[in-house]
Amino acid sequence: MKATFRIWRGDAEGGDFRDYGTEVVEGMVVLDAVHRIQAEQANDLAVRWNCKAGKCGSCSAEVNGLPRLMCMTRLSDLPLDAPVTVEPMKAFPKIRDLVTDVSWNYEVKKTIAKFKPRPPDAPDGTWRMAQEDIERVQEFRKCIECYLCQDVCHVLREHKPVKPFIGPRFFVYAAALEMHPLDVEDRLGQLRQAHGLGYCNITKCCTRVCPEDIHITDNAIIPLKERVVDQVYDPVRKLFRIFSR
Ligand code: SF4
Ligand code: SF4
Ligand code: FES
Image (cartoon, rainbow, N blue to C red):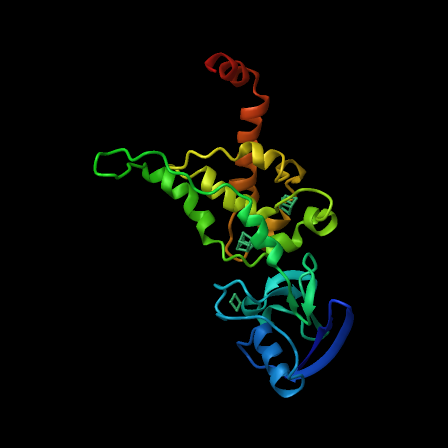
């Protein structure tokens, strides 16, 4: 059958949607259709992709207004009686067509305090860890850095240049470090102030779009907020800190 794809074409200066009709067959995903259009009608259409298997995080875009990986969005799950809109992520500057500049995220990552292990537990330089402590952070390591959660977060979309806010992807990254059983670095002050953890109002939009099904809000952001509250606002802990100094 034939389907229409309404693809955003343009660059940082501006652009518009253009309609492309193309043949689609069973089993195709949005990225297949975009590639077919690129091969047959629009050789200069810019699109970023790599693995075509939902693992590299390169093909992020907005399909029918929702942040999605194009390679994991099946045409059979979309209504094809109306044009399928495909546009670049809105939270990042446009480069060309479907490609955005996500380099801001690389700079943010550099600001998060790195892994700092405690001294080894045994004379041979090894550590001992409980299995349940290791399992707690495994979920966070599934992140493919697609930045779809960053794209959907209203704090980043609406306030990025104004408010200091690293976004859900980097709360997941910070949680993986903070909850690591060997790590002794304290990132809570940084998360509260420079990284804007308090601006997250737990709407869970980021969790809903994560292709790796990471429970961003429940398992990363809320526990980080609880740790900040414990450290900064708990009066008993505060007294304990004063007297133990
Ligand atoms: S839960 Fe927080 S980080 Fe996630 S989208 Fe909402 S405001 Fe952004
Ligand atoms: S947390 Fe999920 S949505 Fe966010 S960058 Fe990682 S894989 Fe993508
Ligand atoms: S091409 Fe790698 S995630 Fe889509």
